[in-house]
Length: 122
Length: 122
DNA sequence: TCAACTATTCAAGAAACCTTGAAATGACCA
DNA sequence: TGGTCATTTCAAGGTTTCTTGAATAGTTGA
Image 1 (spheres, rainbow over the protein chains, first blue to last red):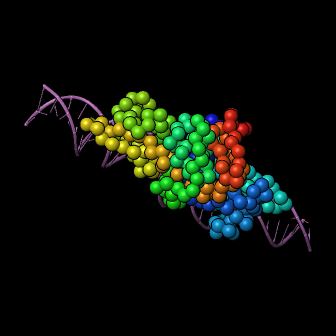
Image 2: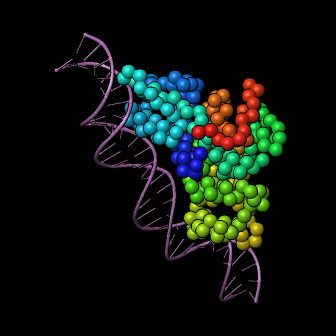
């Protein structure tokens, strides 16, 4: 992932409504959810939802497919994963302390660092 | 880390100059770098640099300390780590595919998933 | 074909963000 | 005390982003 794609993805993530969308859609897996149902679930006006969905899709964090008159949106796991990897690996250059600070089920393997799990640090 | 802090941190990361700052400062460790030297290295006007440094500090991604007339800035590894953790754990709810897509030296330990290393996916 | 339904596009206004030069603050040294 | 240096604050401007209602496009079924 290159710099400008990573920046687009980070900008896309940096908004409350769009974070809500990711959170809602992630558990739905590949099937995703129709725009109308998303709008109803989150209580969003249609144009507003459309605006944010397309921002996320543009950034490579969401995929869409048409089914009859509905458009189903689902997360693109590799888009999110590559964005995280960009920050950690490319931008923070795999700095051990940064990797170590990714507590709770994510951990550094570089240099044989061990798992850090449990609740987050303060 | 709560939602609003994570949002502030993501917004802070979503800017080219600030990503440059993180990348420059990470290898410097706790000692960090004086504002003037940062400005010279990146070729930034002083007020502009100050604006971005304080945005990053405000978001908990940078720390500062005064030494004589200089102000040294250094990254806060736990700030970055907690932000990443928020996206992966809280927002993506530890979705296996998202965790798996964090290739290249970051990997999921949940459910005993194995390391994924090497070059990034496309 | 027509009506109903789903979703997107458009346009306008409000709000937030970024950059810049000028001014101000605070620390050090002669 | 006065001058210089390092950094921040201020104010103005331009740009981008977000929200909203109105209009549009495409699909389905009677």
